[in-house]
Image (tube, rainbow, N blue to C red):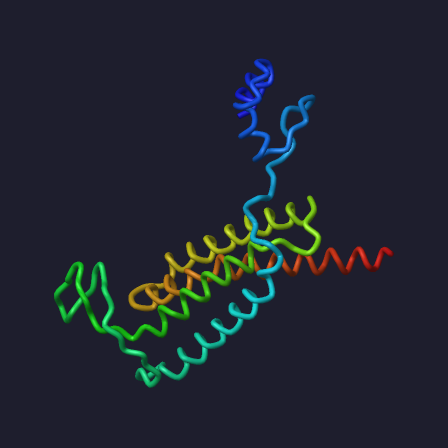
Length: 193
């Protein structure tokens, strides 16, 4: 990218350079400073998505606890499936009856979790961007470290449950670490004042 920027800068090609200027912050003495944070949702979505995230998480836990022995809470619907099994036979592209409560809660949890995790803070500066990046890297390391231990030490149907919960853990680790670090930095800044 730096070679292209240097090339476009030397040619004074304003049209070619406009794409790079929209997506990156430049200092032509040092060539490249940082990428702009245009991938974040507006702060407006933070509270609503947080409420949906907590509600779907609690509902998922409650329904999982109630339906532990047998499915008491059900919402059976005929749904289209790419792959489904009926007994011992695997079928492709057809309709099957399914309890869709877990699918609804999972979709709400993932969508609201992504919006909550990647919504701008009230004050979005370089420090918050740095904390967000470090938290995402940390969450990825921790998530896959735990998954690696589970691959080594957990087998059978229990491993399938681990993989089911693993859909959520990266997002949860990131959200917890990011907001904990923000809280600690805010508390430290308030203490210094």
